[in-house]
Image (cartoon, rainbow over all chains, first blue to last red; front, side, top):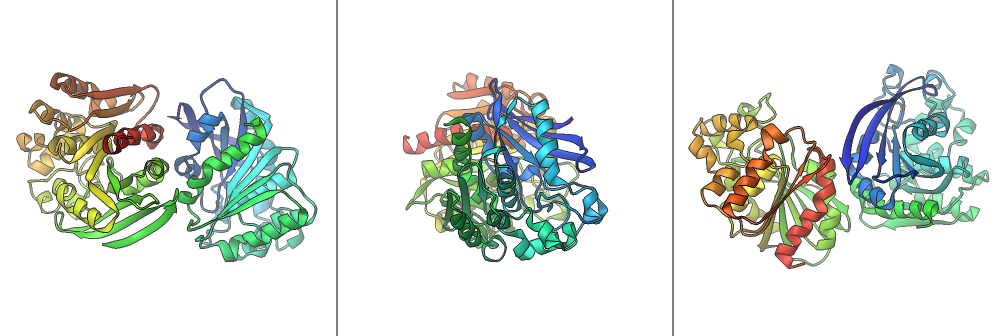
Length: 277
Length: 277
């Protein structure tokens, strides 16, 4: 693992790192905030949205202040493998920076787009080896496509994450315009395979997260009706009897101005789950 | 005045606006954060550094959360006029986004680079007309070149600003490598004219700010020795008997990770001056 940069922030260290990933057969970058103190610290994962890298959340979300106070490590993976010509696409919702955090089964993406395996197995091991973290205490959150990713990971691995939260998540990617490209490109149109990573489909199939679910959604989010579909998510959560809080936040859009406003409450939600705080 | 964008953030509104400026003979953009509530709100000015526009501070400084709590409006001007070919320079410390907030006297810059007059007269009037602010209660802060700007404005207009603070300010721009280009380009090499905007020179000439001065400087800032020279500033402040707190912050660099870490303390410094809080 190679250090790209490290900077002091709220007494701790905000770093970006690069490593050679077996899962995605190439170099990957990720960011970690480690608070000051001895640790080991519980780990909060933040999965980012379409077009983003880890840089957006570490510069714009205001998370470090709260992580410093609550003594949480924040790990921010990239949104896809990088640098493959076949994945450069003019559609910002497909290909590079738009992995949906799935393991692709269709060529050419299957060769590198193995983000589920990367996040499930490889990156936690790297983080556990190099940082003062406690992998027995993990939580996961995300924004937009990363909100989908966080809920999906929590549903598929309830023993892993003590809590989950999402900002404006894509609730049902196999049934929204953005996700059509992913179903076609990553799974060769095999909708059954794609649904194995779909939040609403997972809930309908009986998957349950370990802890309570916190979701914030801005009412002025340009993507809410067509792409994000919080009402579809809420219906699935309710019918499954999954404890959750889904808050419609009046006047907020899809940006990091929205994310930073509610970041502290999300981190306290996770802190309570991993530290009883 | 035209609205470029407005977004909800911590219950208030983060906006960017464009207007035709007489002072700089062209269009200017600036950003304003207005907290929720009735107002009128005291105004905190934030002057940004080399290469920046108002976008850096409004996305990366974590100021809105604190402004919402303390009920302060935050006004963030641009760092220079924009779009003039003569001001495009490969040196990031001169020309566009590097005005030093002075009124240039040498051609071609004198035609547009009248930032001191713009900030002193024109922009406060625009802000006072369009936003729920109280111009009898103003404070000023800034980062790097904007730290120079904030201290300079406070020294030249002690009746205007109740308090001043700076993150890693350029203390003595007429006597550091970055500033040589400004003295040559904006003043045709007239060092006396340039010193009328120089923080250390102003103090030595007897200028005094209205209230106590707060300055933070990271010890790992790559520019501290050669460009920023906090020790020169501290010597001038001490010899002038100006009340101040200059804090060397161990391990911090020049970035917004540094700025965001101490933003809350700076805003509380200003709040105390304008609201007795």
